[in-house]
Structure formats: structure tokens, C-alpha cells
Length: 243
Image (tube, rainbow, N blue to C red; front, top):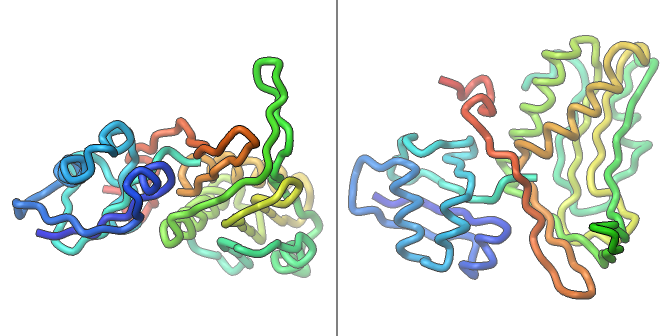
């Protein structure tokens, strides 16, 4: 059987490519079999591939999950629903995003409050008493899955804060300079006490856990991928894909 492999962030850099086709000498394979076959073909990936998160056909996958001929299997480091009649925006944006346009897009006549979270490229970071300087960031996403997971975050927001109206989640991709927006999350509601603050905070925290987006940090001393620590579990699958 053959499977299509996608590699992201550090794994892509180590392999020198982001797409390949693997042939497995068995018919009934699982995620572990694919991972081992990848390492056998690219030994340089061993440490990173063993720790990598897997997704099969744009959904998180786990060691014993079946993989079939022709499936798409993605490996990547830990990252960083329905509209119910309200406006929703989910976008990966290579160009700057207008906060005003985003707010206008999720505002309806019944809206009285909008909470916006905006991430920014920080030029200085204090670490162990030292000031580290960042020149720029380069964001990469597993695009189809990233948008699907943005929708999942919105569905989770609606389950927790049913009075939230519009939701927008926009992640920048590509090279970003110091001071530029990296992400915008906006939630609207009829009143400020109907969950828009809490929903926007939940949105950015949850995005950092399950939406497959990574950043490469470029400093005067060199560059490196910034990888997270959260490891998804079966509970992080979207509702439609849970067993």
C-alpha cells in the first residue's frame, strides 16, 4: 500500500522536503507502521518523528489508528462547527488583516459588544535575565486541517458561551515583521457580560493547543522553529470524528 506523507516545521527542514509517498509492504497498517516506515527511509527524522503528532486525512490520529491505501498522513510537532445563523470567519492570511473590517464582518444589529485579541510579533523577549532580539517570524500551517480546527474551536466556544454571536479566527502565515499582527480572534455578543471576553481568551488558548500552526523565529544569532508542548488526545478530535 502507498500513503502520501506531509511534513511540517522541523521535520520538513530535516527531510529537505514537505511531501513524499511511502510504500508499505503490508496491507493492514496503522499510524505506528507509517511512522516506522518514515524513519526507516529518513533516519535523520528519528528523534523528531518519534515525538511528532500525526494526522490522517486532516484529523488527529493515534498509534493504533488504521491507515489505508491512498490516505494522507501528516507529521508535525506539537503546536502551537456550524454557524447557527451567526457570522463566522476562519482564514489563513498571507497579507495584513484589518481589525475594523473583521469586527464589522461579525457584527449584527443585535451586537452590543465585541472583544478582539490580537497577537503581535515581539521584538524583545526577556529570558533568564537576558534580552533576546527577534528580527522576524515565519509562520507555517497545515492549511486544510488548520481551518478545520479553527471551526472546531468556534464550535467549542458556542458550546460554552451560547450567547456569543459572531466569531472570527484569522491566523497570519508567511514572514511577519516586528510589530505586525500574528493572529486576530474576535467574538461578538449582545452585551459585554455574555461571554465575548471569555470566548476570545478561550479561542487563543485553544488555538495554541490544536490548530496546526508553527513559527520559525529569526534572530541575529540564527533561526529555529518554536515548538509547543501540548500533545493532543482523542478528546481533541472534532465531534464528528470521535468514536
